[in-house]
Image (cartoon, rainbow, N blue to C red; front, side, top):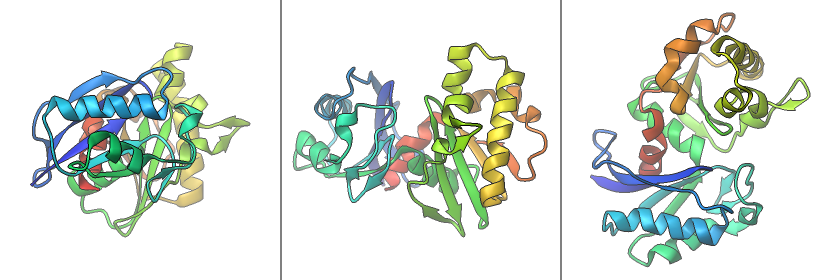
Length: 243
């Protein structure tokens, strides 16, 4: 069974048909740059471009970097504020045409769904937290295998700062932090999240998961097991298709 997945991010919009039996992309993904400003109309046009690249007709799952309830975008931390209060599912469905009904969900929730079914979280029935590190920090919280949606744990206040402004991959890159310096910040953040939720497992996703050997060994003092995501940057696309 194949369903199309689109992952809308602050810097890029990527998508592909997904084989839901295997949890893998059925074709190489196609990516376009996120328009600037990332207004609803401009992003919808880019999503249409990605879907049209494959000549796809049928259901489409799409992710968004913010809180999603009933297809509406309620927050927009790293994209244009014009998204707030938009019926984004209806907007995207209209832009794609009647043959491509769109289901919308939070981007980290999508990545978490994929990791729990096909990846590093598979088989874990306790409390699992999937974190996607990139421009910000996305989070997906699972207990008993079930998702608690829209947790947005990257926005926890930590030492007077929005946590993601200190511990996301973007902070490492823009501030020129060494792996050890950034890992100390990430460890402080994980310890705070662990104190609040007592997970048995952290799954670390986002592009930085490809370099897990550079920082995971430095995250000492955390009781929970910490593992890299298996689906890496494809997790959002796969989870969108699942939804």
